[in-house]
Length: 105
Image (cartoon, rainbow, N blue to C red):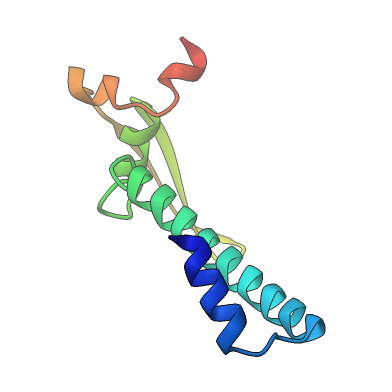
């Protein structure tokens, strides 16, 4: 079946010059690499999205890291503007969701 298609194309269409074929091959390879990279980054982002906190504050990141007692420093430029302590009680679900559990256990 495919040999008939190949024979038909070779008979009815003129050949593409080799330098032009290489040019299109390079362009397609670049396009494929760019698309593949974007799909890979999207996959990593979507899989890791569940681990990152919804709100961007110190308490959420302390829960993410599994820290129960934390000292938080807030900086504005190079000056310390605020300092406070956070004490968090982790339930069992949060202890198992800790991203560093596999590394240190």
